[in-house]
Length: 79
Image 1 (cartoon, rainbow, N blue to C red):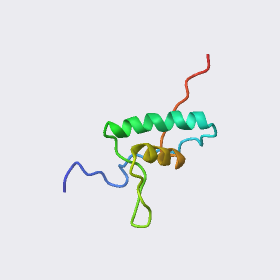
Image 2: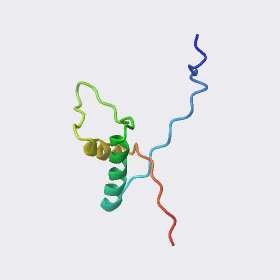
Image 3: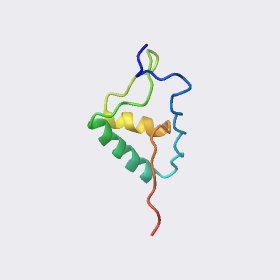
Image 4: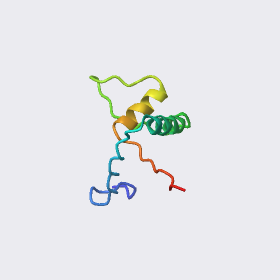
């Protein structure tokens, strides 16, 4: 057995879902930053199967990831 494979007990916990975004301006900003990550080669986080169609454009993929709360974000501290 390979030593690189982690058992179920050793796996890190899955990240908690991100906070829901209620501001469309914040939604656009987070999705745009995620789209840039995808363009640089980041892995897609949404799951698809034969019943659901994957969006073709990376911007749409990023928007769907934000809608599904798969993208973690942090707001800057107020001044």
